[in-house]
Image 1: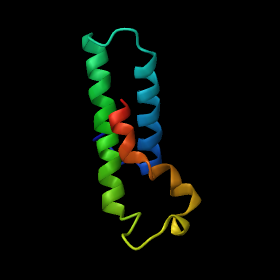
Image 2: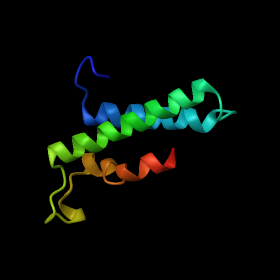
Image 3: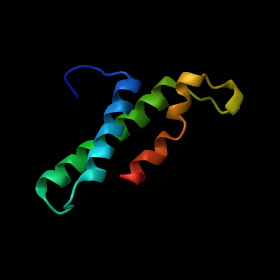
Length: 83
C-alpha cells in the first residue's frame, strides 16, 4: 500500500473485500487472522485519512449536496468497528 498512492475508491473496495474475508474466517486466534485483521483496520484508517484530506464533506453540506458516487463513503467510519 505504501509503494504507490491509491484512490479512495480502491482503498474502500479493498477494505470491504478484507472485511468480507474476515467474516468467512473460521478461527480468530490464528496469526494469519490477526495479520489480516490488522491489514483491514489499516486500510479503513487510510480511507478515513483520505476522506479527511480530500474534505469530501464540509460541515455546511446536507445529504442532498453529496454526489451519488461519494455516498458509499458516508458510512465509512462505521466500517472499522464492523471488523
